[in-house]
Length: 154
Image (tube, rainbow, N blue to C red; front, top):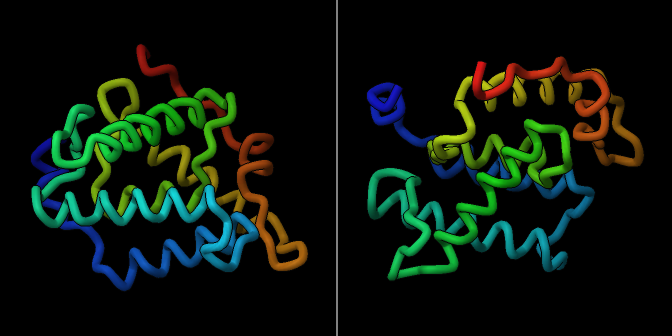
């Protein structure tokens, strides 16, 4: 699994920028004026810089050069874990796809297969949910229609 991860290069900048634009639209925010979305994008771009310098997205929590980046990465892992447990989370489809595009490491408690299944369920829901006022609410539909995922211990 690690060999496949390392063999797969991150997406190019154009694809990642497209995903970020789609993440704004998905959230119903078309500018960077929203402080929460702006913070996510700032931190994500710091992660991109880390990946460019270190060749992976496995930021240690106590990373001395940028301690807040290590904390932010930990929070993304926690949010994904919560998404998988269907207890909220806060990571939208496009944010997950953007993290995947830089080969984000979800940690030991979140399996890459579980993330792939969750993304597939969100994508299927995304295709089934009509746009309302230009805003897609895929997470709400996915929470209702996504099949349950196997437990990490199974």
